[in-house]
Image (cartoon, rainbow, N blue to C red; front, side, top):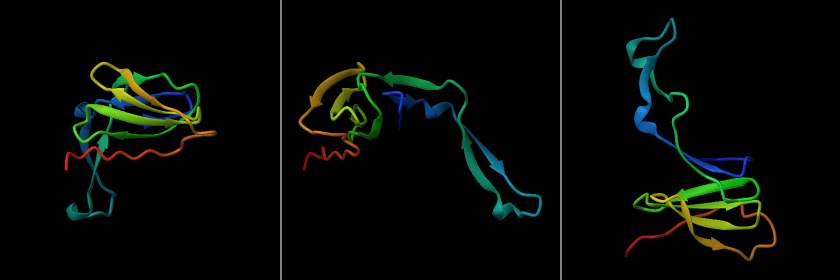
Length: 106
């Protein structure tokens, strides 16, 4: 997930990423670095109900939900299957810049 000044959180399909091996001219095999290169346009979902910059996002333990925080003084709980807002958390007087989630069953 990425968040940004365009008032959205975007989810990306990383299953399409390809792993490539990069090395320098003087590197040995053990110095080679493996990196993931995302293909273009692999955004799988855009969540766009905030009215200002989205600062942070956190997934639920089962990845079915996402909580986002925004400069619009709200946090939102999203159902990722439907893309709908399940709950909006209000009450802050200014930006909500960080979120954490503890949804353990114990």
